[in-house]
Image (cartoon, rainbow, N blue to C red; front, side, top):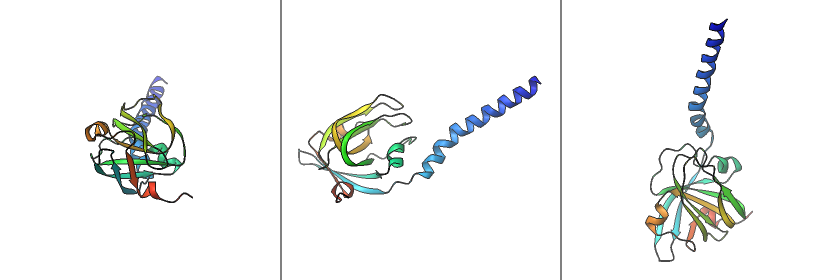
Length: 162
């Protein structure tokens, strides 16, 4: 009887391990993100070029950049929340450290959270109503001099409201 219980425990552990490894890959395959060019126009007069994935549905926004292991320096993700509101985010299941740019309906950056900690459940608050959040690799905001007051411009930020 003990052998049957032990065998059942081993099978359960193997199955659990399989789901821990396979689920992130499976989930990533199920969520599709379109891409678009995004510019950041700094107050200092620089124009910075990125290619971002668009997270505009609830499922896309919930999944975001979770489980990604790498991202190009000129890549990122834009979250479109449809209507301006106070936004809270966290980094659970996010492997990459990120800079988060919180922008209002005009694309003006209102707040920046630099170097968000991977896997953290700490709440990251937009501090004011925003319509967009742009996530970039950690350190990019400081390296390129991105600051509150700068503007993000993309097809997403310039589309007509519904």
